[in-house]
Image (tube, rainbow, N blue to C red; front, top):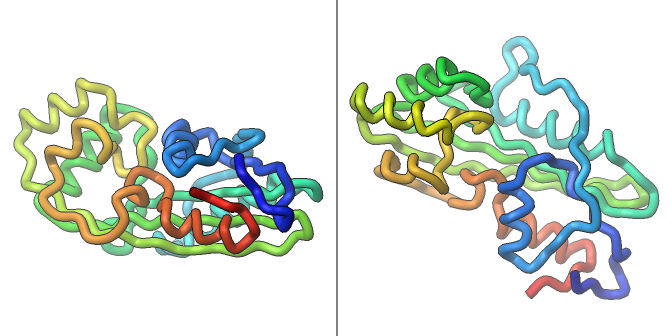
Length: 196
């Protein structure tokens, strides 16, 4: 990892997501440590998708706060209107999410927080609009059977087989995967990292 003298050499990624790690590698950055913060991700009553993403990203960054490193945290939320779709844990979750998203637009929101060693935090909020084609029962069955949607916000992975469902995307593709790279790079550059 190349860093200027302005930034310390340590960066902690506060995420267990292999996708976020791969996305950082795509822009030439390997965190010094990866720590999965243990926070409750249950939405609050009447909490909207944007506020939910921001609260969780800030909570993850605060949970790993350390005085000798920067902490990068993010949370991605799939929202259909005011509704927050879950991270699908079961086939039934995936099926419900795909049935809801079929033939309509939804928003994918990621909050990214960079916590500085002195306790300050800088952040970005990124939204992308995604439109699904109308899905047949056979398409949903096949996708559920693939297992790809397990653990994914909204029950799908745009970087996988679900790419064939996407008829329209406005905004950052990497945001929908789980980490908006342009905005993340801007946060890191602003803190002194010399990224390629």
